[in-house]
Length: 168
Ligand code: SF4
Image (cartoon, rainbow, N blue to C red; front, side, top):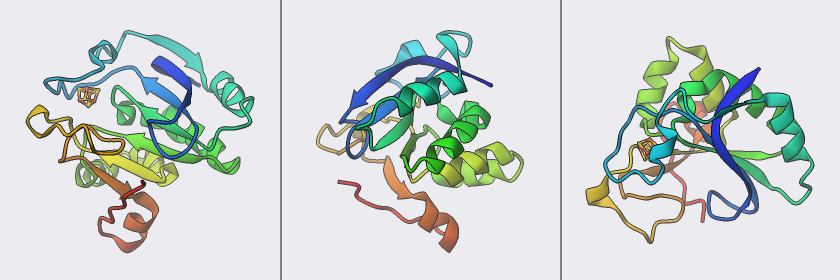
């Protein structure tokens, strides 16, 4: 199976805790004013990569703690990302997923789309919501604006209500 990506950052310390492999997926419909990655918006842009090749590249880097799915909008490609995420979880990587949707919207979407539920289930921490330029705050860890939250997905799904965390 293939994933359409804008690019990868093979060793990052700014997209989640510890040393991480970051996948910037291609395609986003949120169109947030002030977006830092406008080149990721076109759903037909970027390049396609095989999941197996991505997995092999990640596993070849022994110091990585986790993987971050960024964008673009990861939930537009929930199926391949959930499959990749499942393989990564088997190998004990933690997963941060960014989304321009809020957690509540994703939960509502997941009722009709099991791939969205599956991507949530392999995500340890969801950083949710669109970037809002009027609420921009450069001091926030891992986020661009104050409306965005860091959500412990496993706890939230288990409790049935949203559980925020600091992830510092
Ligand atoms: S969700 Fe992210 S990638 Fe998409 S427009 Fe907003 S800031 Fe840009």
